Length: 552
Image (tube, rainbow, N blue to C red; front, top):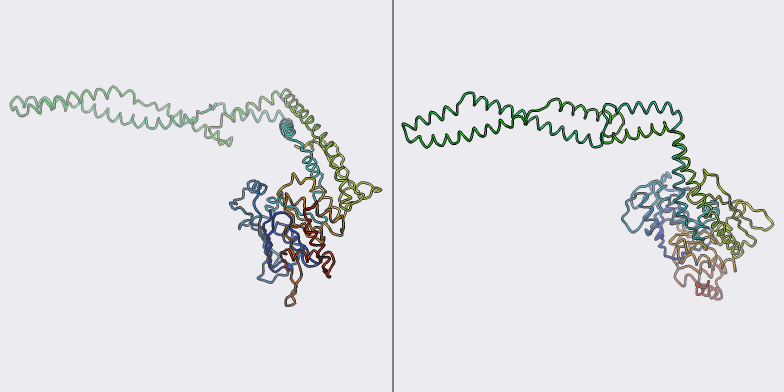
């Protein structure tokens, strides 16, 4: 929902803020007062083109700020576009300087213009004379027909994905299989690169672990050699034995040395037992230099080959498998081609079955929809209007997830005229009213939209204007409606009613926007009915229109 619109220095509006409500918001005022400026400003804030010379002074800036309540549609788009918005409101601001240079902000951050269009594509629609682009798009009508017929397209969407994939696989195989002989030579050359290495899954990581272990192992081995030399030196000189013997001899003459002699003799035997244990482990620490070199060489091969194939050493075995598979495919080209073609045709047949089901349902629903629209056209002042839906089967390349239907939409406003495209036949007002019928039919599906109508009731009065007002009012029950109107019937249905009028201050013409209270509404609607001469009778008529706004 559009919560508010703030406009500064834009054409006749110096500064004004509008706080919109849910339901129906109506704007009235005399011709030239600036009603369309509001619509132009809103479109400009949402990324539209600036077609006006704003005549700004050097330090002046046009600023138009639109605030939206973030609903599910907007939230989904925010996530798709990866925008960082944590607020409950989407704040869009367009600024234009005196050089006509502009920038757009989304919640304070500068963003490209196309982002805001994508962000609000499912949330706000402008219904203006000659701007109903959706009526010129057959896909719009297909979606409209499918919605009204509650046509479930889940199965065809799945079958289309399978068909598309199998077809692409087949065509890619055919394309890749050109110059088979040359490609086989290239693949076999690549395969030969693996002959010296023959990579195995997890082997590279195991080699790195072994290398680290070997590094530590060599350090232990080197230390053990040094230890062995020390022991050999000790044994060769018999230093411990000589000390032991001399202590024994001294203790024979001096008993004070007896305790020391016994203590040394005891430790002497423990030391030699320990030395014997160390010697018994020497063999374990003998290091094989050849194994160490082999591991280093294999790691080097992994690293070089991974650089050649632009992958990681751990993935080399997968690369080799893919090359072998590709060689096998090319060497068995005809068999593989037949296999892929068969799968492609099977999925095509499945898709065509689902597409035919959808097409039959769609044609049946289209007949009901066109009948309903044609019944409603006279109530919208298109007395002899008639819409026609014709379906044709698309070529295979144009098949899509919605089916194979091509829809031709034709229209005429006179039963003696030939059918032609809507764009060539319908006037601006007729386009607006046709779209109003379509929106009223899909109202139960289209919820929480902001729909903007600019003079949809232009040139209408009496019963026709009343019919238009009822359609707009019904739409406003599930959507937000903003309408510029010249019709008393339409204005009387509004939940909020603004009046736009011209004011001249110091020879400067400006547009002023004011929200009308109950009395102000009666006077304004009476003014629309009778012109500048408001009478008690026209005020009573205006009051009655407001009192009966809920009548449908």
